Length: 140
Image 1 (cartoon, rainbow, N blue to C red):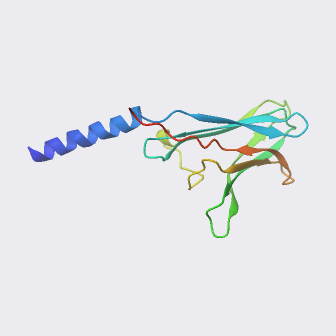
Image 2: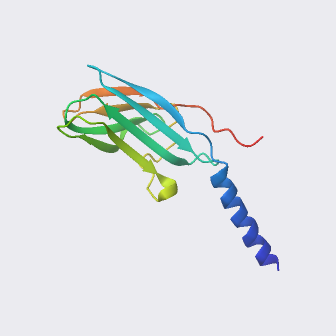
Image 3: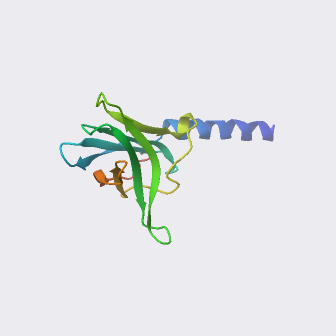
């Protein structure tokens, strides 16, 4: 009887954690020569990464790498978290990681408030900005 209650309570807590996840936070990326983009971040109630998305547009065809600055690393360093490819058609590209759907967390640290850069294949910064730092709001 005691074991059954524990299983039910655990299941309810897991469901509540998913339902009560915080809102997505979105910030603009600023670029050269008309380049545009944004970064979106969503953390769950335990402040674990749930969604990380970077979208870029109005950039030349190329492969772009996304870097996030980890100021708490020893020594502080830029961490490459993924890449995007813009084809010759010039359409927008998106890097999207959704850990609630089984994707692995590419960042490995709390990225709120961290600097972010998108670099082209020549390692030139094309877009930059800051990942939103708003706190996840819990239930009232």
